[in-house]
Length: 178
Image 1 (cartoon, rainbow, N blue to C red):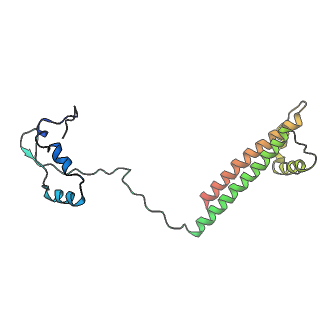
Image 2: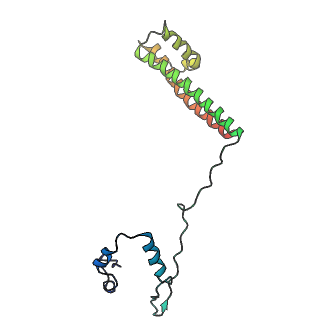
């Protein structure tokens, strides 16, 4: 036993410890040695002195319950069919919002880098973006040399953000209300 303050053996401990030569000679320790030693030990705890003076028996230490020792209930093996369907519908709604958001963001990026939206895939992308966020086009009124490009960029960019937020919100509502 060591002293709490210095880390050195307490006064009475030096005569209770066996010499090092006796400890080293008993290595390696086997399971039989441990069982024999535990059976030979006295199961009664050693008495201690109280501040009042009489010898008192040590009470066994009780384990405290804490949040770390609580075991959560095991999850159910499989959720009910209704829950699975609701989760599937909520996931599809969120995926649809994400898809619309990506299409509008791609259209805004194409306008920002100067892709020709009059022919080819640029025209198809512009038609899809106008169909998805056409109502937002009138919110902005930019003037100047690139006013039309800025209006398109602002409308499709805002539409992309709104589609993403609306898709996640709708998925959350579907999951909560069903």
